[in-house]
Image (cartoon, rainbow, N blue to C red; front, side, top):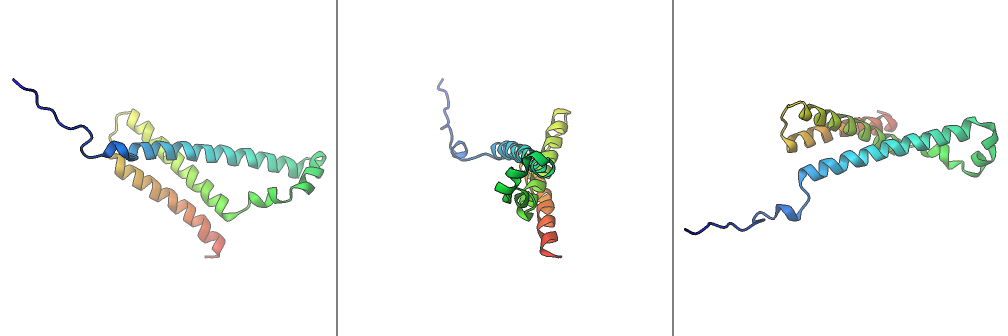
Length: 126
């Protein structure tokens, strides 16, 4: 009796990024963005509020302006929404709920994009 052998990787899916890989990478990147913003925010507030850092504030006036940029807030809000919603999806998956991984990525990304777009539209004056 002969064994039937199928060619491996016939759909070539292993050569591209899979949806699960994209989701995990976006989750990690959004977490890093949140941490970096918090660190920069703490440093900027220290420079602005602490009188001994007056020379630093004078040397780097762009620090305070950087954290008040609308695109920075849009990226931050997208990251917070994506990281929170995807973390909730992971938690619910651990509790036994089943989700379509493609649809959940698109829904979570879409909802997160709404938060980012709201911030950009707010700065545009609408």
